[in-house]
Length: 210
Image (tube, rainbow, N blue to C red; front, side, top):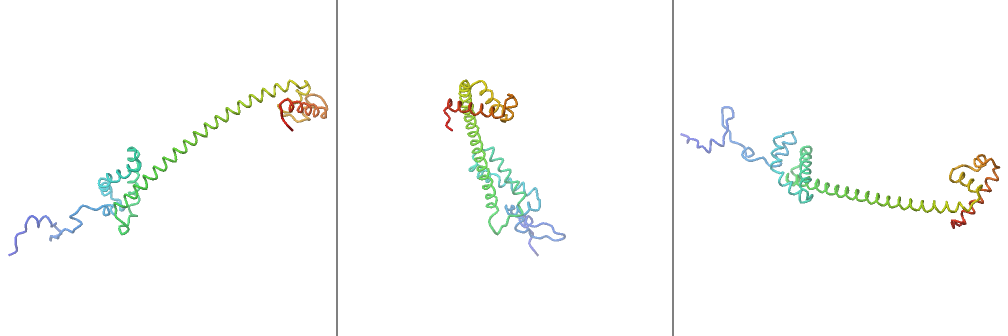
């Protein structure tokens, strides 16, 4: 007569139709990260939650060592798990452990975040320097223009009234020699002469060599 089954024997059997079958090994243990990734690849949200709970502390610690900032580390961690959900099917157990695969993704994301942040800081710094330099240049140019304007105004006092009028029209008004002659009601040759003679006087006064 067969012995009565013990409680331990009963705990290791489940009904299968009219028979009892032994539980397989994988049904007796917690799913490994590799098992969970396989399920995630099929869209199993429960497996994803389980993987997050099991792996988040490890990955967060790794990310924080690289990024330093807690808030940014939390953002990177979320990005890591989004990538895990999208790319779980790419995990290949024969090429390495699941934890190693997860850590590689986390480390790469953390490094990319640091590099991006440093690039942004450099870009902001360079833009700030350029703006400062441009402001300095603008101030310098404005000062120079004011000085030159005063010098030109002073030099213009040495011209005859007809020369000054012709030069104002030609160089400050943007008129051609023919247009200057028409406005002053003088021959074109006379307009050219007044402008030429006036410019000679200005060059001498301003110390400009030909």
